[in-house]
Amino acid sequence: MPSISLAVVPSATPGDSRAALAELCAELGRLLSTTVTCFHPASYGELTDALAKDRVQYAWMSPAQMVMAGEHMQLRPLLSAVRNERTDYCSALFVDAASPARFTEQLRGKTIAWVDRTSASGYLFVRLQLAARGIEPDGFFGGELFEKSHAGVVRAVLEGRADVGATYAERPAEGAPVTRAGFVAVAPEHSVRVLEWTATIPNDVIVGHGLLTKEDHRIFGNAILTLAERTDGRALLYNAFHAERFITTPRNTLKPLYDLVRLARAHGLLAHL
Image (cartoon, rainbow, N blue to C red; front, side, top):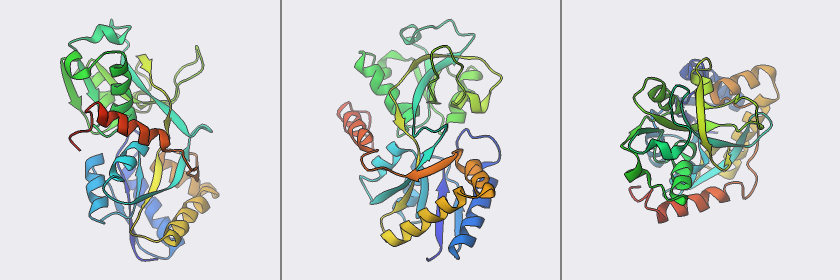
């Protein structure tokens, strides 16, 4: 296999994500007997641009980002993350616990923090859910911030720059605390209130550039799965991706995302892309 590059967009995962990615790439290089270069783009847009220019061959992406990037280039979903034995999660619209708001409808004229216009949990799912109830965010909210990461969204809300934010979260059983969410990862000691949850979203995926062969993708995917069978390998993967294990992306897993993107375009949410 020729030298390759693996990209990961910064997220809310604890620790030094750059160091974690560097350690993972070094071990993958040993397994693959090639050079695996790390790329740490600052945003989803920068990642898409790097893929389009073939500066990145493999990437850790949200499924919605993969679907939209795949409108302009050929990308192949290889592996899906498994967290807490789940392959999906939700988006949560949340406020600081000190906020008087108990319902989204009480936030008219307030400022909302989003991740990025191509983020499923940090923008698209919430926007479409609100629109279905007749709440058009452009006119409803007084201001919108785009923070480029889930950690940025959480900080914007907790610092008071935004009144409400959208981030990823795993919806708990009725009455149980939230144990996985952007706000749990960034500020586990800080109390927040979830105003609403979206429908489930497929977990992040490792994708391969279509310019590489299916055999290249098979070899790379097997290297990830091999690491996941080792104790030290699982630690490397968890530090880089915050996932306990991986499965081959099932066929039709991403169909709801293709439908979501079409719906979002119909609502004019993605007209700028």
